[in-house]
Length: 284
Image 1 (spheres, one colour):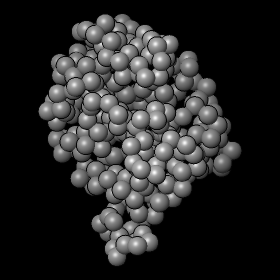
Image 2 (cartoon, rainbow, N blue to C red):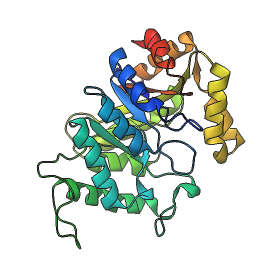
Image 3 (cartoon, rainbow, N blue to C red):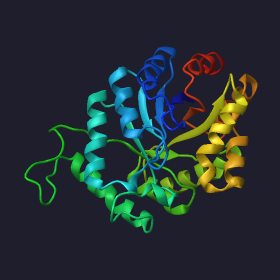
Image 4 (tube, rainbow, N blue to C red):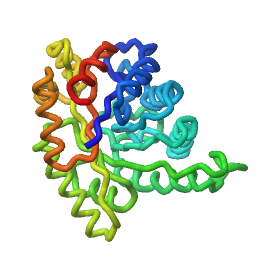
């Protein structure tokens, strides 16, 4: 199982200038990937900007949006944005997409929080058309350079429609920020949908787990804050599941490996840049 690390782009009032150096240190430490967190209505850094900054600061490490909220974007703009990040990174982006569950993230007029599943299914076809170099209706030119590749897609969501979306259109799946035993059923659902669709090989299965090494309670407080709009019960549960300290982090890694995750992205709970080396010493 590969081990990635998140970018702290959605820590409240993050010191945004830390992101390029965070990316460089993560690559030097030997992590497989850098993951971004996607949300609009929160005082952090937009995930596409964080990934672009990471792309420019590194040369080898993979880049994953886990997850970007696809339906909050006009699809032509997102397709170009994603290909641009993939291009400047030299083909290192994997675009992880979710529907979004907070109404305040839908800030573009006409792109509201209803019907997001159907909209995303249409948008996926638009993304792929753009990446093939086709000229959209109303445009005089293609939106991306000739020879651009189709950006690999991962999808989140813990319902059958999400699993089927992976089987139809994706390279794989991203689990929610939940303990391994709660993600295992989703992984099985994706595997079943993939097989029933007649896809060759296996879906790429990515897991996410929040971690804290130096300041466990502070990290949990930051995670609670991020999820607080979902209600106290949800925020309390997710924050309580933060893997705090070396022994718990090692246990979390073993648990996700046991359910067949291909990659685990350890999401930071603060923008303390020394957390990179602290967790690297535990898991790498």
